[in-house]
Length: 496
Image (cartoon, rainbow, N blue to C red; front, top):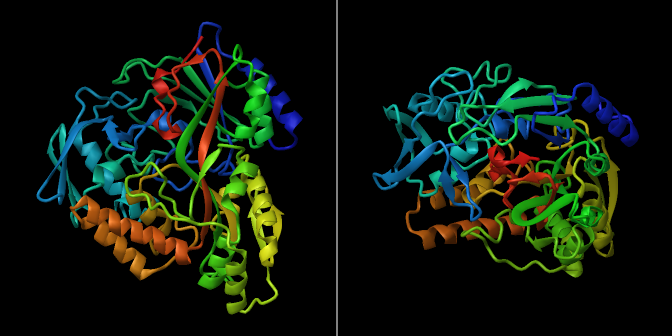
């Protein structure tokens, strides 16, 4: 729908808002999404093509991540380990109902978690929670999660933004009939147009602050900014920090800048030539000046250096490595790999996210002195995550903040569904297994640090930075806490 031109997108949005506008008495919150799935977005929270942000507003987790990344109560009120961390007991909220009026209880929790790790479904959650052996219903408000090996970080893993609860037996119908415990209920789902959610008056935390949420497809990042400036949407969750100057009028807009563990990367498929050679991979990574890339792509203070390591500086297991630019080292590695005259590579990118094109452009400039000749290949935003991501041999990606115990197995364990670099290293996998089962924190941290160092030596991901996220919303929008998007309390938002 919003595909032909930027102007067309804005005009069409204005017409739709006028034609289908709600009654004046309604409080409406209008946001956009990028149509990353090309119209195939799913309301199944365990699907690889989940529809953000409606899913985050319709469903709840047992626990969610606080500002420090540690779990806070949501559908669970308390939890504790037993049997040497081979099992975790979760106590559930009383009086919670699904949007269809049915009661939420321990049976739904057991069903949801076992579906997350079902081998036949092969959800992206499976490598994150694969240590779970079974879920036992103790009573209607208590579950026991039994693991195959001790798992000190299981509650942290359950803060995953996709670890959402659905009704027992609903797996085959949840996409067509999205029933959750969240603050909003589905009225219409139209990924290529406008999806509409309405307030759930029986939400266990209280009635939401707005009556209606409209989620509007706008694929182009510039069009999203123009739509906010024109008053056609109320909120952009993540924009190019350099665009903050466009919203300096505090009488009209509120801006937030949040240090996060969100990262962007250039991904090499390690199962594809020439990236199946670890010398080539490392050369392509160490040839770049990451500080300069941050300044060009994100602006001064827009992020923190990451040494090809997805565990951010706020995580207790973070490896504080050094990764300065090494042109001569890159040339030497390329020569050893059979490229004495340098190498030509194509990097596939898109404006599906504001910074994806500028990241490749900055990288292209940084590595040329090492004999690395980069061709930028522009692809459509519409369907990028289906047609390019994990398909092309060298492409741009982005991840939200995740704890070490989650991101390392989810993105780098052999065979994981979202192992986008197709990295396969049995020694790395064994380190993760040992870390997960290690009860002593210091010993567990040492194992996770070793795994991060291993990724820097031979991994297929060039991760130059962790982003400081820039968020903008209209001044009449209140209640947006300065936290990562997966932890925003949507029910607290109001629109005057």
